[in-house]
Length: 382
Image 1: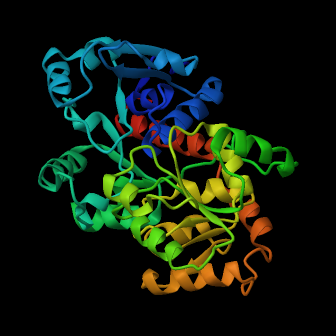
Image 2: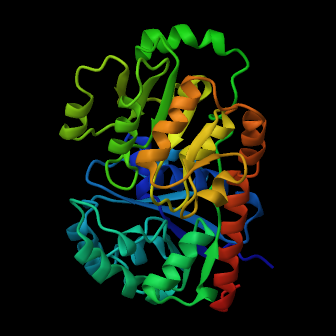
């Protein structure tokens, strides 16, 4: 007996952003999940199709999977979602039994009871930062998420926050941690061979601290910069990987030859940065998961971070945790590193490599595939 006529439709739109070079955490996780599912496609008792939507025609076929791809030439915004809903495009083109929304929310869903949604975190329900439409998010998200058939999230902390802030039953949520792309993030055997490339392509010729996925809100990048500026004649530069740098951050760092803001970094270059950094610093006040922490560890880079939200789930005992308030503790730990008063590297590299090895996209894909099968079964489809 075959079940190949049953179909999961995955919203691949975040992964398309990854394909065209607009890197986001959600885009990376969506892409890696799809590729992980493609690797085990022969084992799945249902079909998977990928749905994408944009006027440029950049579709899920660019992911080069074995899955059928469906593309709609509508804008990928609220109006485009509403037009797709009125025309029932996903239903007519996809003919799915269950749909997986990979990015928190979608206004184009007709029947949420046949929808699995990935909620990456509940940050927007707990905190407020400038230039974010909290009213709309807090109005639209909870009813949508409550109406969906099932929820996937990436950490136990996010699950707890979803339950507390959106009034969702615990049994309705599956925790599936994200993985690490170990083919792209690994410890280089010969770091000395990287150094000339770092100077010629990235303009770096000194040792440095690294901060990836910068933000002046919950990532607390201004606090990191001020902590660094408190050092006298630092032996390490500060490198911020940040594509869209706010003007006030550029003003704060202007004229300082030891602070570098790198934009449009390729994945290979990011691996080089992790491999050669003195430490990766992630002093965020909240994370749904924390991919940069694991990526750094997978490359053998010590991680300095904070013990809050989901971070201890990801960093385990391999991370160096600093206490609040960070405006006091961060300058002290940087001073200790500069003056070799802290054994930051003692066991941290090996501990980090071991911790990162626990997270793979194959595990994520298999756990997600199991949720698909369970939800199809609950609909009496399988």
